[in-house]
Image 1 (cartoon, rainbow, N blue to C red):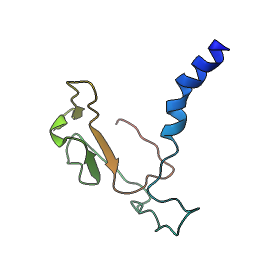
Image 2 (image 1 turned 90 degrees about the horizontal axis):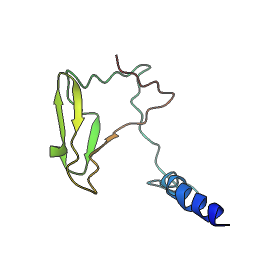
Image 3 (image 1 turned 30 degrees about the vertical axis):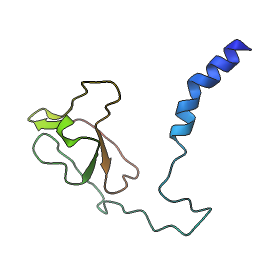
Length: 96
């Protein structure tokens, strides 16, 4: 029984992390989600900015150089995050 409870408590954050949305279509009519609209969309974080992304948290924790983006975490609870401004569907994410 203790193992079952321990397993449940370990997996619970993963289950709850997948259940959030900006609009619940079972409760109301939701607007269409924007997509990037191209067949192929490329983001080269080594040479260009990240205008197609929204920074969550403190923007000064994200820096950029010729190696790409760097996310700096200096204390507990920090989580510099990028969220795309459009949906990425059927995606292949690769470092080139």
